[in-house]
Image (tube, one colour):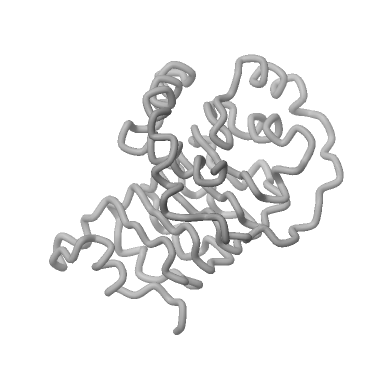
Length: 226
């Protein structure tokens, strides 16, 4: 099937490791491959980091079996709904920027999330969308590359019961002409600040994003700000 993820692509992304080692990989970088359908990911039970940005995906079904994911980059695809991602109960970092997402329901996202990027989506045009996200994700420390303040957190608690305003149509959110690989490495100087924020703002009992991907999250967000 054209656009379907193949085992060869997975093996290449894993550095050409042998078959036994392949099933134990923890990170796969599968961005910019023109993927429209995900296959085989259910075989990788050890996977904790998955990069799928700048593909042609329109749903998240093919990755929901990856229950150990902590870091998921889905920016700049054609995904219109986050429904189902709540099954990824260990997910700490989520990037869905640049997708035609107009709604995010309270039961769409796992409460484990500490960092989320919804920039360049119709959802990010809603009034007080940050407060809406904080009402769903009370332990989130960073939204769209901007740290959550104490005032925002307090306001979100106060406004959590407010009625939803009219929401825009999905529209087109996939203008990738200005997106380059260089953007992924941008804002590396902010990594230390993100790590400290993740450690200090989230209750220790709930945990925080691992050092291994706190910086990656900031870099992906910086790609949208470049």
